[in-house]
Image 1 (cartoon, rainbow, N blue to C red):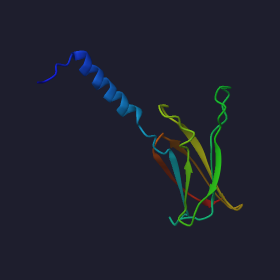
Image 2 (image 1 turned 60 degrees about the horizontal axis):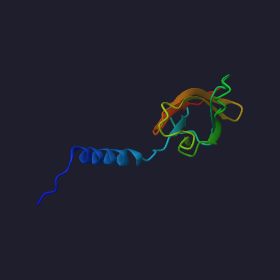
Image 3 (image 1 turned 90 degrees about the horizontal axis):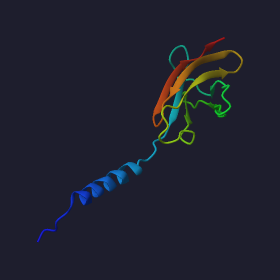
Length: 128
């Protein structure tokens, strides 16, 4: 014999299934990969890459990002912003890029960091 179900029981079951599927969403990494190349397009190792935001006058936005790291032999450096991003947040940030190698080589640009993605930017380092 088939048990009778009411519309309310079926609706509640579907609602609970939907809630369980959305509440299990795993946060993806929010990363910025900066690639530095020389004027010939070759990877540039051991350049200091700085990602930083402009200070804000809004006292509620205390977070100002300012991070540095050096490129590897492949000319890449990756910054991880996963812990700074809050799941459900709309948008993340735009950061300035400043690259130095010694006193004579320099590059600059910007990168838009989108949440839960690998964000990439390539810059050409040149003599000052």
